[in-house]
Amino acid sequence: MEKDTNSWKEHHQSPVRGQKLDAQTRCQHWHSDLDIIAIKFACCGEFYACYQCHEALAGHAAQQWPTAKFTTEKAIYCGACHFEMTILEYMESGSRCPKCTAAFNPRCENHWHLYFDITTY
Ligand SMILES: [Zn+2]
Ligand SMILES: [Zn+2]
Ligand SMILES: [Zn+2]
Image 1 (cartoon, rainbow, N blue to C red):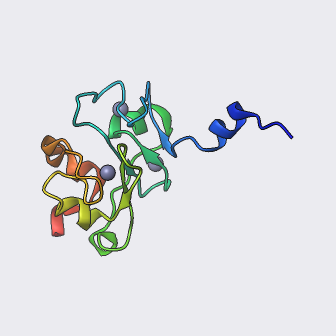
Image 2: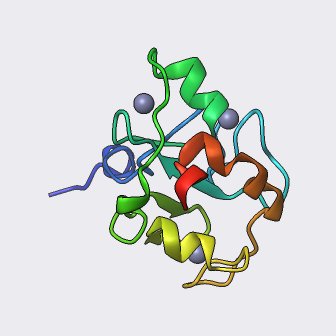
């Protein structure tokens, strides 16, 4: 039996959605060396490269994760090693992947309120 390598790849692509994604989940909007994470949205449970990709592709308003989910919801995806971490693990990571130590963009912190309900955190 011969294996069809193309279909194998199709079934093992990353779960992340976004516009012009590269292999490490950089998108059209955020594409520096550090922009390698994707975030799962509370509204649809889907990973997107960024909030702008969600806005363009999801067709509904984004919702933020409530603080009660910060320790349990693996909502952050490392595009370098495909590790999924909880929101709290990400917030306490010091802008590095806890698994592969790849550097994350520290300026993402400015956008946390778009993904997480940090008003009461
Ligand atoms: Zn959504
Ligand atoms: Zn994007
Ligand atoms: Zn990683």
